Image (cartoon, rainbow, N blue to C red; front, side):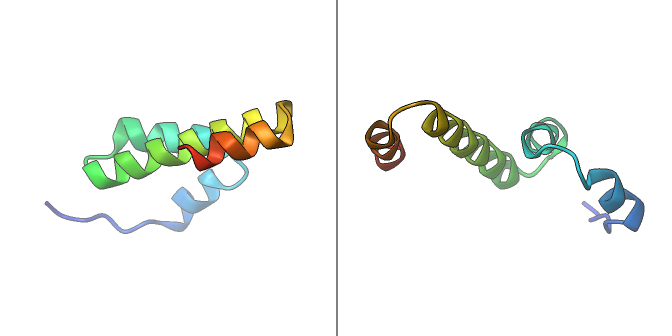
Length: 67
């Protein structure tokens, strides 16, 4: 399988887009299982941080430590 180089147009297209959107695109378009898994873990981490902003600090710390 041939690797494609990232072009400046691709990088410019990605700048300013929300991280969850980019991670979901990686999950849908990547053929690399490790990259797909990393994107999934990052989305889970983002979700945990979103919860942390909505709930009590102690509960947020518990959620992070138990993941």
